[in-house]
Image (cartoon, rainbow, N blue to C red; front, side, top):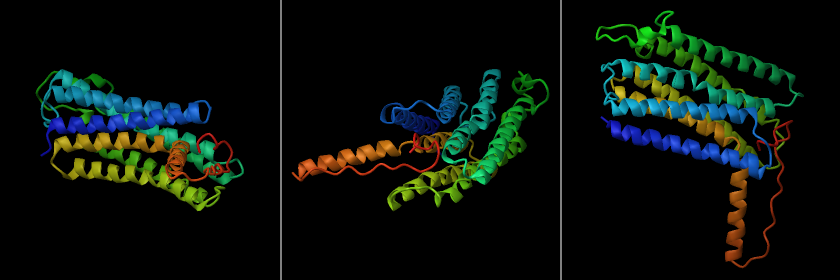
Length: 292
C-alpha cells in the first residue's frame, strides 16, 4: 500500500501544477491579451482555493497520522473531515461554473437553441451544487455539530456516509458529463482558419474526459476497494485536474507564442531568412477572442 508520505508528495505536486497553469492563464489574460479578468477566471480562482483548502485538510490529517485509518477519531479530526466535505464536494463545482462562464463567451447569440441549453446547464449545475452544500451540512440533522461529537461510539458523520457519497458523486458526475458534451455541436460551427487549430480546440474540450475518468476511478475505489488512503489520491486528483483542465482552455495564445519563439530561434540557428509570423484568427464567435 502506498505510504501517506507519498500521498502528500503526490497531492502537493498536483496542486503546484494547478497553480502554475492558473498563473499562466492570468499571464495570457493580462499581458498577452491586454484584457481584464473575466467571471470564468474568478470561478477558477475559487476552484483553486478549494484545492488549497482540501490539501490543508489532508495535510492536517497526515500530521495526525490518520490518513491511512478512517477509524481513528477525535473532535479535531472530525472537524477537519467535516470541512473536507465542503472543500471537495462543493468546491469541485467551481471549475464547472468557470467552464460554463467560458461557454457563455463562446456561444454567440445567433445560436439561441444552444444558449437556451446553456442556461439549463447552468441552472442544473447550480442546483446540484446547492443540494450538495446543504446535504453535507444537514445530513446528520439540523445541528451540524453532531458530526464531531466527542464520543467513541458510532454516530452520524457526513464524511463517513456512503449513501451521501453516492448522491454527491451522481450529481457531480452528471454535471461533469453534460459540461463535456455540451460544446460538441459547436465545434463544426467555429470559424477557425486551419485544421490544426480545430484539432487544438477539440483537444481542449476532450481534456474534460480526463476528469470523467478520474471521477469514475474515485467512485470505484471508494465503493469497492478497501483502501482508505487511495481515496485521498483520487479526490485530490479529481479536483486539481478539473482546475488544470479549465485553466488550459485559455493557454492557446501562450502556446502559440512559445511555438513562434521556437521557430524564430531555430531559424536564427540555421541562418535562414526571416520567419513569417502566422496569422492569428481566433474563433469567430462573439466574446471568444479574449479566450482564444
